[in-house]
Length: 155
Image (cartoon, rainbow, N blue to C red; front, side, top):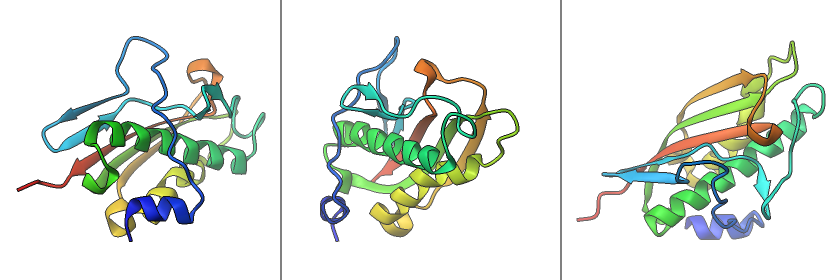
């Protein structure tokens, strides 16, 4: 099943590429790799999930924030690759969780992104990963996510 069909089946409309909040580009394509810049849980230009997971937000809200970040990353990938069907595999996901003191469930938060990528890309969506707790993120965001994907070699 095509990625577009999987998105439709899940009722997901890929967002527009969020504009950068500082002096950088949303992503870079080099050779057969795309590196996204860190994407925040922005929806319609607004920060949807703000605050620390474990105090201001629940684990479930953090999970939803990571999922939204992944969709924003995929929008960047699509803009650079032309089509998500060009993705051979998701290589690496790095997630940062704005964590309350003592909160240690960063892996479960970033599962919001990892499980979506696996659902969309199947085995090719399984990836290496880091889930890091931090005391603050840009704009007070709950989660920031970056991904690296490998593109199919076009003959």
